[in-house]
Each structure stands twice: as C-alpha cells, then as structure tokens.
Image (cartoon, rainbow over all chains, first blue to last red; front, side, top):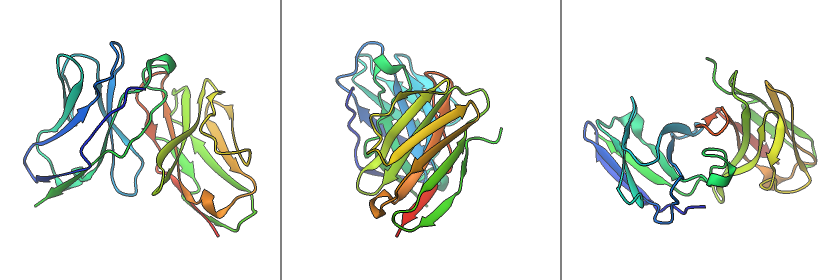
Length: 113
Length: 112
C-alpha cells in the first residue's frame, strides 16, 4: 500500500480556504488518491478522488502534483460544519481502485469563527 | 436515497452474550464493507463482500466474529460470545465495485 502522511491538525478561519496537504511519495502510476472526512459521531464521508489531473466537485478541489507524490485538498470557503478529521487514502491497486481503504490518523481540521 | 442503514444504533450487552449488527446497503451497490472504530486502533476494515461473496476477511479479529451477506440488500455481523474489548463503533459501508464508499451512521456497541 502507498503510505500517506498528513499533519495531525490544522486550524482555519470560517470563510477562508482550508488547504489540507498529503504526502504519498510511494504511490504507483495507476493508484488513485481518495479523500474522506469524518465529522464527530458520524460515519466517514467520501469527498473526492483523483489520479493525475486536478479535480473539483461541489464539496472540494483536489490538486495533485505533477510527480503525484503529494496532493492538497482545498475547501474553498470553510464553514464550522467542515470541522472534521480528513483522511487521505491511496487504496492498493490489486484489490480494485477503491475496495480496501486503510484509514490512518488523518488531519483534524478545526474551523473557527 | 435512504443511504446505508444500520441497526441497532446503540447496543449494550453483557459479556458472553451474542450480538448481531445489521446493515442494509444502498440499492444498486454490489460491494459491502464492515469497519470497526476504537480510540486505540482507529478505523479498521474487518471484512468486505463483492456480489454477496466475502472477498477479504483478514481484518476479522478472531473466530468469535462472523459476517454474512445472504442477499444484495442485507448483511449481518455477529459476535459470539461478546467481550468488553469488542466495545466500539461498527460501521457498514457500500459501493459500486471499485468506486467510492458510502458509510452508514454506525452502531455503538458496549459490552459490560
């Protein structure tokens, strides 16, 4: 499995962009990067995923570096409801692109007023 | 769409009792996953099914744990006999094959 490294915690002011980094230097050519988050007392929630190109959906944007060794999840206008633990995951390719998720410790994002 | 449905939401039982957790995946999803979350170990994958067939149960802690998926719309995770160290939040998730997973609200299990 490609190991991911994330900072343990980050703060962000409400209304500002939250930029959450992730290092995955051992990622192989066809492995995807997935982001999930877990709000307190809820199940994890899928956010976005990507392979090489930058991706954007209604929740966030994902910027993947050209060498694919790192990525950044961007929440463009963070709100208090975005306070959660954010997980960057690279599932192993041989079991499918999304089947076997290994959740690390993630980044605890605190959005403040 | 109702999302993934889990029952019960909370379960309190005594050591030695049998516990059965239930999950209804999202209609049309053919992969189903069971996870366990504790403060000490974080979120761990226990087992997953594809098209009702168990694919990987390497995360199942021991023989006291068993999981079944008799049809595409129902799965159970059974613990027999239960022990205090089984206390955790158990999540069920579903997906289309090799796609993003959608998680249920979880079952909080307390074994006294």
